[in-house]
Image 1 (spheres, helix red, strand yellow):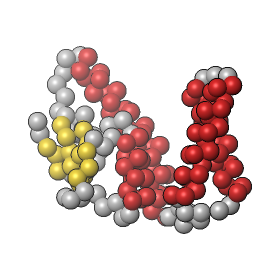
Image 2 (cartoon, rainbow, N blue to C red; image 1 turned 30 degrees about the vertical axis):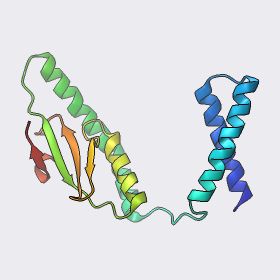
Image 3 (spheres, helix red, strand yellow; image 1 turned 90 degrees about the vertical axis):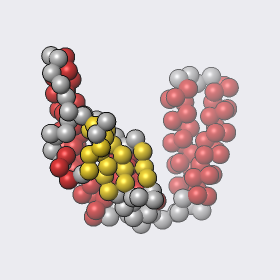
Image 4 (tube, one colour; image 1 turned 180 degrees about the vertical axis):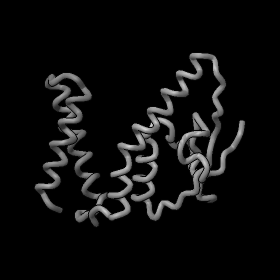
Length: 151
């Protein structure tokens, strides 16, 4: 175990604790020190010391994220404007085929999909290999490549 990496994780967790606690009283500091100690130790025990590093697929996925967030934000705002004017909106749920390719990649994929406003994951069916996502506007880009469930 690399003591410098552990100490850095401990400091990061302690800082996070103090930010969330909102105060630096002696009791909060003591509890934060203990919580960060436990967290850094569990982190070191559970995660490997050497990360395999980013994959090309992961870099491409993350580089597309800002564009997806902006596009989905536009979809949400346009649907909101249509609803305010009393116009109907064709919305529903969609199933997306999904192969996580390992636990870490699966969590990263679901996290990136859930950051965009119109495509957050509400359910995962591991047996069928699909994700369930709400779709505010079926006319939005990317709607044609998935199976859509109607209400």
